[in-house]
Image 1 (tube, helix red, strand yellow):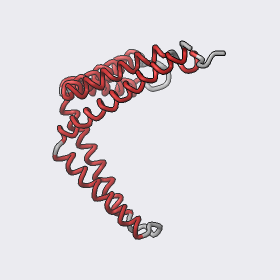
Image 2 (tube, helix red, strand yellow; image 1 turned 60 degrees about the vertical axis):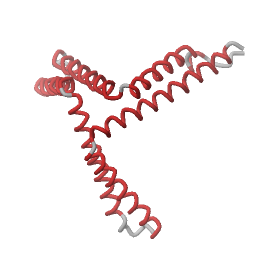
Image 3 (tube, helix red, strand yellow; image 1 turned 60 degrees about the horizontal axis):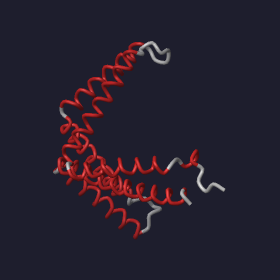
Length: 179
């Protein structure tokens, strides 16, 4: 009787390769944070240019008008070039958008405390949440570069942990398959 159906769960080898890749990328992101972020954004730029070129090449697909495809393709190419030429500037823009999101979330929470369905404990928690979100948003706006670097590092840590879990899981599945 077979314990694990390879067609359904995949092979332990695939899990192992995935785990090793995640672990390696995570370590690279943690050890060379700024460089890995730049490479990541540049790769997104290359992908955007490729999408733009494919859109322009396949303009007559019958689903969109020709002018819409020209606009989509051109915008994707321009975005891709911007991502490739000034990757850290783009990262800063995302940090500012992230800061604005937190500030707006905080303001929304503070204005929401007057809702009749929230009791006094809920109002206190909601007010605290709103103030914390505003403070976090302001900190992100003041330190955008550091925010992007910390976010990249934390993402790398999460990937490394995921990779380690997959490597361990592959080892466990391999033990079961060899029984």
